[in-house]
Length: 406
Image 1 (cartoon, helix red, strand yellow):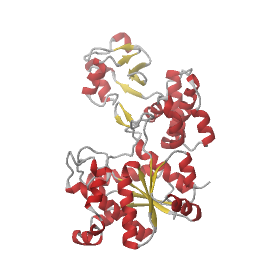
Image 2: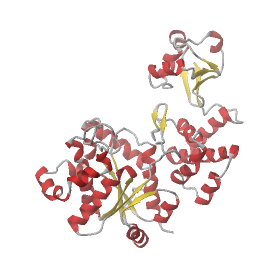
Image 3: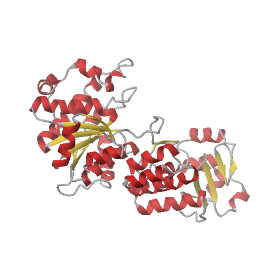
Image 4: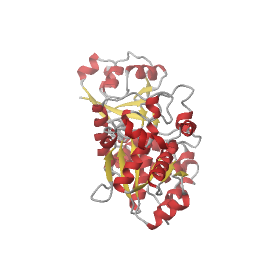
């Protein structure tokens, strides 16, 4: 079975430029391919993880990945899937985000000698001569065709700046640059990138008269089409300081039954026979599949030790376990308890992202202290509760923290 067949069987493949040629190429040769990552935050999120899994499958099959970091394109911002123009980032912010991406990517891709490359498109985009770019590249782009692309079409009514209109040309230039320098003949991307990746392959064919290819993988969505990876605190990050391993584990442990098989196929390396078996479980048995999914994904992202700790914490709170040592824990001094409201304490310890979020959850009766609802935003911990060895905080239905008084 070729890697294209593997990706197809697992449900990754969405749109393909030259399917038969790509199948033959991936079967007969070692192919250099790339995926671009714009540094829009200081951590990768679970949406990026799908792309990293595609890269990992391709690398395991003997192909060479290029992880392209968007130090140049990040200065413009991709209009695909956005209602408004992205906020412009400083060079310092972009460089910081790139450093964070590099560290995280090395967990999933082997960048040792000859096996993969990591490059930054700022190295060539920032030094481009604009007139030269227009003459060498711009001449190959039809404005009419660009405007018909989905990434631009949905923005036309609300307004599309000339600034953003250049993004497709910049991304296409990236492909051409990597083709010339590294013999990169294949670009991959999420399905919202179809217009951009197709434009890049077309540019190489026009400029070089040689074949170049692309395909997209599907975005991580629920069975009813909604984007996955959103939590009460925002995105589901791969950085443990932004989304703890326990929160990460719990997200996958609590997904809808209908989404289990798809997530097992896309986000783990379990054999497809096992994926289909687990996905076919019904009623209470599907929880077994969710536990395996949560453990496997957390293990890939955070390591076996953190995955095991998260699993034990979950079992202590929701299953037969009794050891609370692995439940997310924070310490509070008696002075803080005496002087601060519970809301202030929970904000200081990042249980709530902000006071406004905390007030909203308390008002909606979504905060519990030792299984008792807290409905007063000015509530202070009472003397009798202070004598407890473990104070359990529950936010919503299934998010727990342990507070220790020191």
